[in-house]
Length: 314
Image (tube, rainbow, N blue to C red; front, top):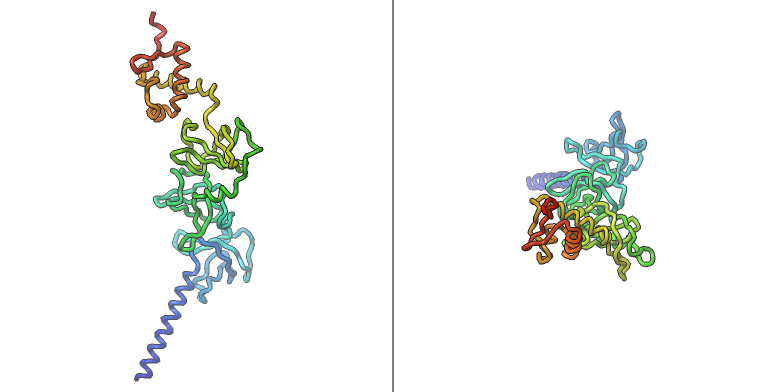
């Protein structure tokens, strides 16, 4: 009895161990990962890839529509794994176009409460956790992102790419000049300004005061170089040169005055922060625009107000 009981217990333990091994093997492959698997068999639906469990019912379907080239039994195929609408692990030969650690501008194809999904060329979007986002994202945006493997072993992306962009950038010294126009995209936005990676691979900083309107992260911008720094980076502006800016700012103020019954409670003594919050221009730019309107007799100042001059009055 003791021997049978002992043997039965041992046999039961062995079965449990085999079951645990099988479970472990089944869970070896996860969605949002890339794997190289062997084609075990084929049928009219497509190919079945060996999931390495010893149980053909666990094999992973590589549907005909998910094949970018014909496959044969015995082939080793690199695939992207994801879950189909029924929750089954499925394979596609459309793998991410980028490698782990690389950065690229990727399209936002879906948004959720937990983050977003970006198109990296795989069969399904790659998850961008909320903690890895920069700014408010919109569908269709293109943003700089890096591919990495998260703690669970799945592929993910992050918009925290400052170090990677710094390593990929080049110096603008001797190549760019003050007044040059530069094209690029915003990869980070702070309360001090916007950081842009240009098509020439320069890093440009646009101070907050040099932005009439704040671009969103991912926005493509054309800026004007205002300063070349010793470290090879650029300072730039989204505002036109001063002469043109006066006309633009004056027109903006005139529109605001006309929209408020011909007068607004602002003048030379209004604090700079109020001017900035209301009109999104500096106090100096405000004074230049007001001076332009005063000089041309379009407005007048009275008791802390800017008042539109009525030409019909004598």
